[in-house]
Structure formats: structure tokens, C-alpha cells
Image (cartoon, rainbow, N blue to C red; front, side):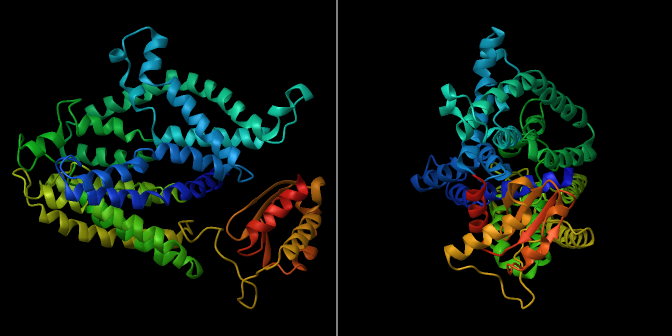
Length: 484
């Protein structure tokens, strides 16, 4: 059940994730044009950086809306709106200024954790809460005096109320988690190459939560006196040592992850390769060129969490190797080609070309491991899930051209499912109706097959899928009309 829920969460994130590669490339090109001023010295660079940053910097909001929309039983705008409401409530209540007011202290004295509250983890939590509220309250009818707020209008209200409770819990929990991670980072900073590896591992492992920024503050900035990024670029440090918390990311971001994207493409089902190729290619290029890895990582971290742990471990190994041999390069934006090219000429860069050699080896390791693990354990990476296009016995995809045929098909399927007495929820992916019923034995499978659909898949005692084809969205919409 947990794995199934994570995979559904992963599918929900694919819509906002699909936007990120383009934004990352825009920022990378802008930074390439003006690497030191971040747009101050070039209007074109500023335009590109700000355009891309407007999306990348608001990733948590995109996740809140996307998860709420994707996890709701019915893909409805009120669910997406509720995701935004949830995010706005919690990030406002737990902002530095609000917390300072609640605690009666100066904003400068507020725990630094609240300065990082608008992260991906909060976005995902907001979307999940909103989807739960939608699934629970979207069909509730209030008394006549309050009828205006019934149904879908009730969802954002209940979401806001729920986020008050969530905010209250995080008001206590969040500083403990954040402060604990900072302390952990400080404790491993004295372990040399091993410490760099542990940092790399947990840096990737914490990406889904956004808490990697807590660790980054220890190693990249001046929280614990390391200040790896500023010292590397200013030349104030020890050659071969300063930059050790940056260098190991280059082989992973420039070579490892693009190779992983290639492995996911090659292991995708043949009839889905064209569909996933554009996403994987764009995400892989963004990782190589700009070092922005989230478009690719969020594409599989929830669909195949075990694979993501492997990726985190390989990142740790990469940092250990680079630190051990004192190969260093640095970044101002991220560990992509742009920063590698610029930093390799700096005084503290030490044998940076060896990072390229290490990256080529890691590309092979990533490709082989990802391909073997995906196939052996049948992981549902992009192009391998239940959303794949299905065909009938002749290999011809089922199509329904007229609205009347779709309406008749939907009515026949719904009747065979047992109608309102048996069907409890209706959802769909790209080609399948995903249905929850009270009793799967009450479903007339023969009658459904006689409609000409491609097939039926019984998942359990209460879950059944009807494989319709690319017109499934319209069939699902017609069933929703019948149920309403």
C-alpha cells in the first residue's frame, strides 16, 4: 500500500516536473552569458535568469498544486486551488515575521528553520492535505442556510482549517528537525573524505523534503566556518581541499544522471518511449548543462524510491573519490557544465579534468546499475507504469470517435460495474479507468469485455482497472456525469 501510494504521488508530480527542465535551461544560458553578475551586466541574461528562476524558485508551489490535483479522486480545479490555499496558509503562519510576532521576539532571533519553510516538502504536504480534503468533502451537502459553501466550495475552507493543525504541529517539530540536521552536518565535517561522502549521500536523500538546504548551509556557507563555495571562488583556501564539498557533484550531475535518464529511456516500454523521451532528454540535458537535477530526480524518486537511494549512495561515493584524490572544481549555480568550465580556470581548481574522467566512469556505472535494477525488480520508472498505452489483440488501439459512442460505452461499463450501489470512486490515467468498488465479484466482467475495451485488470478485492485506450479521459468524464 505504501509503495502504491508513493507511485501515485510520483505520477502526480509529473505535471509540474515537466515544466522544470525548460526553466533550468533558461537559467543556465543566462548564467553562461553573465556568470558573475547573475544578469546585472546583461539585460538578456537577466531576462533569461529571471524567467527560469520564476519557475525553479517556486517549485514548492507547483508541487502543492500538482499533488493536490493529481491525488484527488476527480481531477478538479477546486483540488488544485485547495493545494495553493494549503501552501499559502502554512508558509504564512510559519514565516519568520509571523513566528516572531507569535513568540514576541525580534525577527532576527527567530530560529533559522522558519526562514526555509517554503520548501518542496511543505509543498508536497500541502498538496496531500488538500487532496484528502477534496476526497472527503467535495460531495458534502450543508444545510440550506449554508448551501452556498457545499461540495467543492467547502474543500478550500476545510483545507485551510486542516493546515492550521498541520502548522501547529510543524511549529514545534520543524525547528527540531532543521536544527538536528545542521548539528549532524557539523559533526561529520571533521571526517575528511568520508564526511564529504556522507554529506553527498544525505544531500541527495533530503532533496524530496527540501531539507538539504540545512546541510548545504553547513558545508557550502559560513555556518560552521567551512564556507566552501565562497572560499573556492575567492581563492582563500587550500588547493585540493577547498572545494571538496562541491567537486564530487560534477561527475554525477554532468554524467551520472544523464546516463540514468538514458537507462530509463531504454527500459521504458516500446510504445511509451517517444512519450518519455522528450521529458528524459530535456531533464538529462538540464542536469548536464546547468546542474539542475530536480526535473530528473523527481521523475523517479517517488515512482522508484529504492532506485533513488542507489542514486544518493553513488553521489556519496563520488564525493569520497574526488575528495580522496583532491580533484576540485566549484560552482556558483550548480554542478553543471557551465560552472565546471568557469571554475576550472580558478587558482584553487586542482586537476579538474580528472572529474571528467571520473564522470565517464560514473556514466557507465549509473547506466548499468539503473538498467539492471529497473528490469530485475520491475520498477515503475517513467514509461513502465500502468499508464502505458494498451492495445487489443490485433495491436490496434481502441478509439471511440463520436461523443455518442463514448456516452454509450461509459453507461454500459458503469452499469456492468454495479452502478452507484457498487462503485465508490472513479479515476483514470492515460489509458485506463481506475475504479474502486465495494465488491469486485459483483462486477460483470463479461459485459464490460463485450463493449470492445482492450482488457480488464483486477487489482484486489476492491480495485479494478478497465483498459479503454487514449479516449479514457472522455469515458471517465461521462461516468462522472452519470454519478453526479
